[in-house]
Amino acid sequence: MDADVELRQLRCLVAIVDEGTFTDAATALGVSQAAVSRTLASLERALGVRLLRRTSRQVTPTATGLRVLAHARRVLVEVDHLVREATAGHIQVRVGYAWAALGRHTLPFQRRWGAAHPETELHLVRVNSPTAGLLEGMCDLAVVRRAPDDRRLDSAIVGLERRLCALAADDPLARRRSVRLADLSGRTLLVDRRTGTTTVDLWPPDSRPATEETHDVDDWLTVIATGRCIGLTAESTAHQYRRPGVVYRPVRDAEPVAVRLIWWRDDPHPATQAVIELLVALYRPG
Image (cartoon, rainbow, N blue to C red; front, side):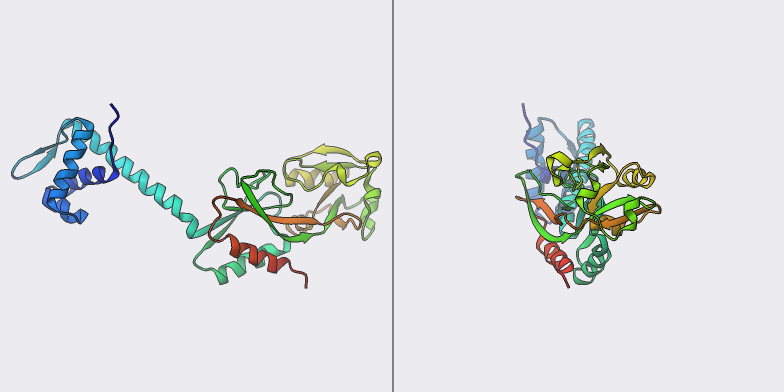
């Protein structure tokens, strides 16, 4: 038989034991003594066991009542934790990102948000996944640089970034102020297929570079510094990851990278629109 147990019944049981009498439990719960008696009786009927021994002077748990009481306390603690977790999104907003957050706009974003929305704490969370931690539940909003293909997600373009080439500092191309895609076709391109913004589709089919794969920005930079590979990335990477032995040069004939904010379509965080408006303002030219 399935017992239909309610939280109010468990709270009533705990209150009776903790307060010592039905009268004091009623006062603590803010209900009548009759309501306490009815609630306890309904819990005992639902479980099919007697939970308390009542005398004219005291109330004590039965052996079964002690076991139920211990479980009731744990359940109520877990429910309190659940409520705090569920409502935390209204007092904080977690913004995920994969490789680079917002480049040169990262610090202004944090400072302006704190000044304009002191009631909502901002946390930046780095998660190297295609949705920068959104699908994994590690953030409420995420900054990505390619359109999500999951229909459960919604997105908005908040800005554009130049596409840069990362080269070893002693690479012959590093002496130039900028490069073209054709200059890179004979090289080996280091890519992150999960979160990166670059694929060989940027080049014509007959002049595409060879590729190697990585999954971490630090490894990406380490390999590029050796001169074995080059990389193409959004401008934010150059601002956030300066590395001795690696230089960044604009790719003047490559399309810019769209910076997007993504969120759950059916459950947007209350701060979503405010985050979008601030990011658009930061990325606005001039």
